[in-house]
Image 1 (tube, rainbow, N blue to C red):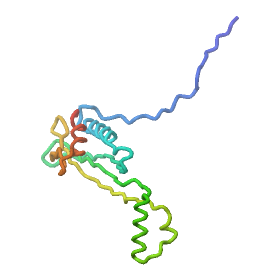
Image 2: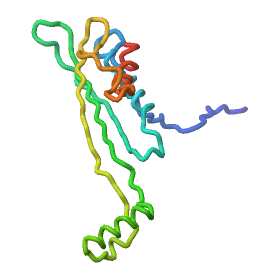
Image 3: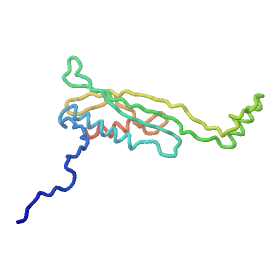
Image 4: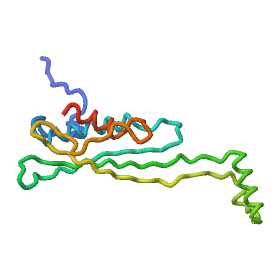
Length: 170
């Protein structure tokens, strides 16, 4: 007589896969705002500074959903875009080091051991947070104030491009 035993393959414990938070339904203002933020995050990720450009630029977006103002049944929101910029550290070339040494000599200062080492030029980080108010018109989210498509020097406005993409499919 053959005995049949159940065969179990793999682990006997259920897997602990981290769950992705569920988004609100698509047909609600909250759900539409969540999708706008997803698209904005995607656009920001795509619009990173080119590697090797010497610029370190990081952006992140977050938002705050505001209750409907008095006299209105429609919600409002504020999108914040935080931009951190800095120049990538780089060693001074020989010409720059020679110029620095000449300036020290001209001022009568004796170059110390510290100034004889290769100098590294670093830029301080600058952090800028810009607020973009949004209003919900019953169907979709829109910027309260329209953004200019070009900057003062005629180049395309990054914020315009980001929001044009993010708000397009909402």
